[in-house]
Image (cartoon, rainbow, N blue to C red; front, side, top):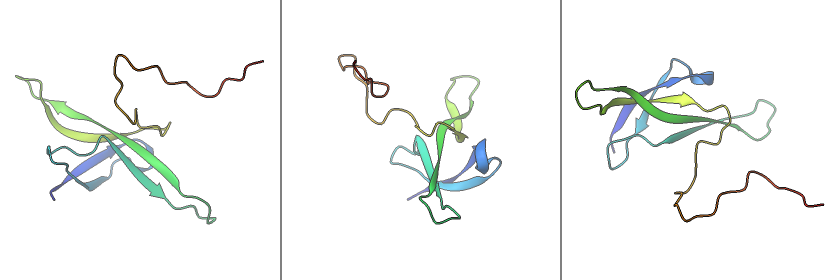
Length: 97
């Protein structure tokens, strides 16, 4: 499998570059999760980074490369495709009184 040096922006990984495996289309994954072990022995903290274009070409507007930006919410975007006929997802539990 091929890998590519991909820069990270924001959060604890700001300014670093890691080799990221490329998928069958030649692009890195849309979200990159980095587990950070807890010093006290608790559950690890997971840092979530989202893929964004590094820049665009002048003539065609195609992305020239990719970089990862920090997602402080840690959601990383939708986990499944959203179809126009699908019901909207609920934003948490609502109690009926």
